Length: 122
Figure 1 (spheres, rainbow, N blue to C red):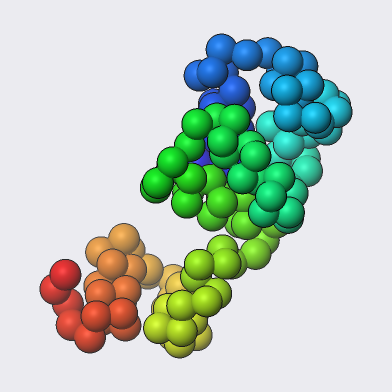
Figure 2: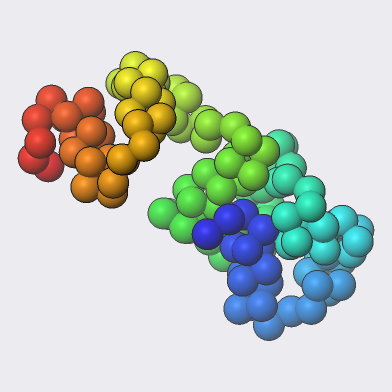
């Protein structure tokens, strides 16, 4: 799921209209529409995103996923990944592997297990 799809889904599951949601969050309705359509990326300000996460009652993994998808909508690596030296150290090899044309889901999981845990079992 992409950030724009998640925003729209969260708004709909809350039972609020686009205009009401935008008003509640202090965002121009036109700009909110652009966010939901994926025209505009998520805002970079973590305080704004935290306000939105609270509005949608996101906690735990849902909130982490919300912030991750927001970063990805801006074509950025999520902050919790950037600050993890182990993951950052594995990224160059990961990128090389992604460029391999036969990268299956199984091969991808095997790569991450090997790079992050030093073996093929988790």
